[in-house]
Image (spheres, rainbow, N blue to C red):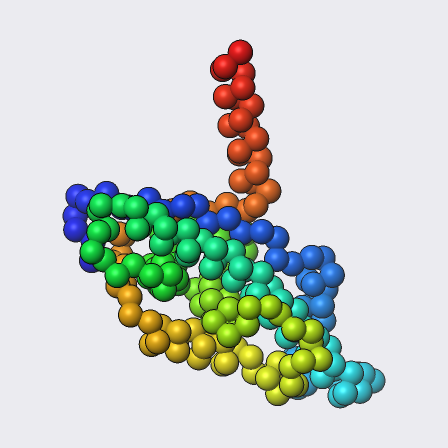
Length: 207
C-alpha cells in the first residue's frame, strides 16, 4: 500500500477518443438481441438462425473494433507514463514499464477516474481496459471481419483476456501500489476545448 502522507505521483492525462458511432451502437443492440434470441431468452420470431448468428458476429466485430481504438489510446498513455517515470528522480531505480501503468489502470483505477467513467456509462472499465491492452498485445492493426473465424468472434473475450495475462507473464516490471499514482481522464473533445480555453486565456493575458 502507499505510504501515508506521500503525495501520489502525477501521470500524464489519459485522453480517450470516440470509439463508437451511432451505427456501432445500433449494431451492438442488434447483436445483443440476437444473442438473447439464440439462447432462448427472447420469444422466437421468423428470423432464421443463420441471420441471428450473422447479427451476433457483426456485433462481436464491432466490440473488437471499439477495443482496438481504446487500446491505441491506452498504449499511447502507457508509453507517455514510462517517459515521465524515466525523467523522475522519485521513481529512479524502479522497473517501470508500460505494463506497470497498464496494471495500475486495470486494478487500481483512481476514484475520480472511476467516477468519470461511470458517469459516461462505462461500468466494467477494468475488463474494458484489460481486453483493449490484450488485443494490442497481438494485433498492431485490426483486420477486416472476414479475417476472423466465427468461433473466435463468438468467444473473443477469452482470447483477449488470455493475451493480457500472457503479456504480464512475459514482462519483468514493478507493479504500482494503490494510490501511488494519479492522473486525469478526458474525452478528446473535452481536452481539446480545455486547451483552447487555456490558449485563449494566455493570449488575452499577454496583450
